[in-house]
Length: 323
Image (cartoon, rainbow, N blue to C red; front, side, top):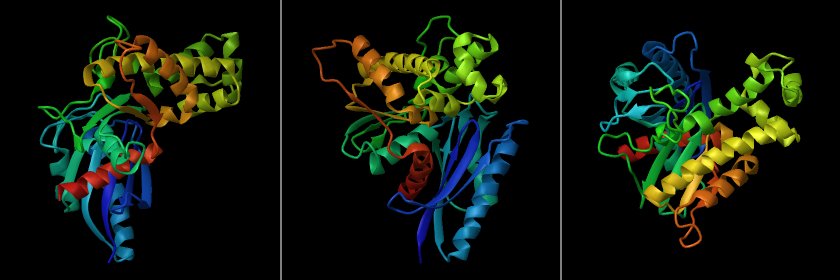
């Protein structure tokens, strides 16, 4: 009989789930949009359960056993690995997510931060397999982060380590959903990329002509992948926007190198699909701002190997290890 763990990755815009084997391979998968109409805890929980039940039925049809469920949540997960203390992009406030899901699904459930899950997947199966000191940065709706040291996730005293997106890098800068100003994710995330591109289009800037044409003149239809596509096609404005995001990314990475001194930064999340269009300016900015530059070893900066599947795979494997 086949044996799987079920991984669920909850982001600001989607719920992805999959049946994952012990080698980190996704055998079956499904996806739901995070409901925009409210994103209330109950609606999000219903969406998760709907995806999980679909995959449990697939496992039953295959005569396979599902041992546990791992959930990677886009928010601050408490040290109990059961409660979402706060989620900037969802309506979770001290949400007992593990309890609610266990009552409805009836399987062991492990909840962790989505970036922790992604970092664990890259450490076990992806770009960081040979690294002992890893920092993972996930660039999506916001910025998530995680630390793996000598085979262990570093969650901090209260379980909330790695929330790098809410480091202040611009005093009194742009307002962030977390309640503060000047957070890193306001300058180096997918939201930041789309915001800057949309501002150019709405201002009818001549440099936004190519992007506007791709949208049929509707700025509300703008999404990050379209900007990346335009940049790959040679649009100078799209390339400039990605360069700016990359430069801000490098600023934050240099700060993290000063604090944590990892051997490797792995950049994941949807924005990382831009590859070298993002990472080349990030590396240059990182080198310019690295404390003691020229006199210290320099961490590598690489793109994640597992792409958007990292959180799902990691959540499943963390559930497996928790057993």
